[in-house]
Length: 99
Image (cartoon, rainbow, N blue to C red):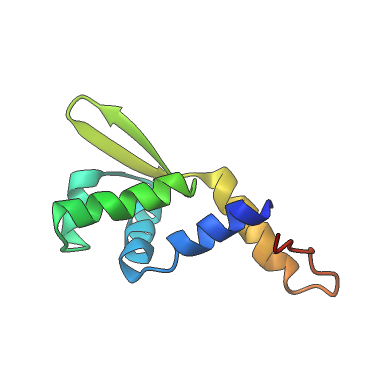
């Protein structure tokens, strides 16, 4: 996994609201953005900002259908993150560049 991609993923997961949003999307597999307010009671601008961070990091895919935006987990990015985290348990860690 590319270092900058990993940093973006880590930042996107560093907020409790984003973690909760991600959990709810994963739980139901596909969720209308408007339904997130039932689980994360925050303002619309805050919700948009959190969803955007998850989409920009690649963890969440968004699809517009009519007036609604539907969110789903990006399984490829989730698998990349899982593989990186799993690699931390082995003796040969991937080298992360700080440049």
